[in-house]
Image (cartoon, rainbow, N blue to C red; front, side, top):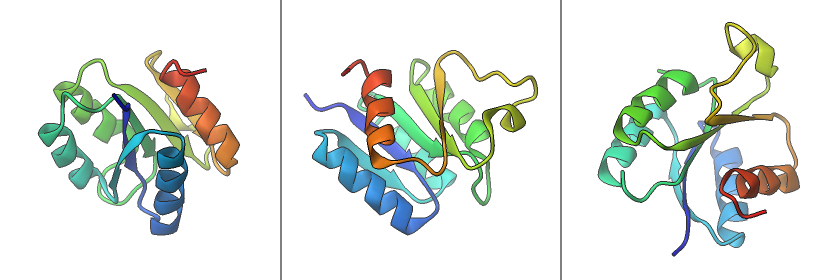
Length: 123
């Protein structure tokens, strides 16, 4: 069975490219353009989602708050945050939840697929 990734990115071109690459790697991808859509998708498919891949800075709600809300629905969900800001500036103490990973933008498509494979245990 394919692993499923919920991709949340408000920039359409970036979202489409990431989804295409991840699908070519054999993942099932659920693209979302904003946090509200992602939360709704997670409610509808809570038993199917293996990974949340999300931008941190988005309109309406940031990625941290959205991930927290989705984790109330899917407690063991793995999360990879993406941002152009440094990891240290995005957290109060410079640390990310141990169940979360961080991918610094801009990143290569190879770096994206390596990170996702590692987090999902496909290395």
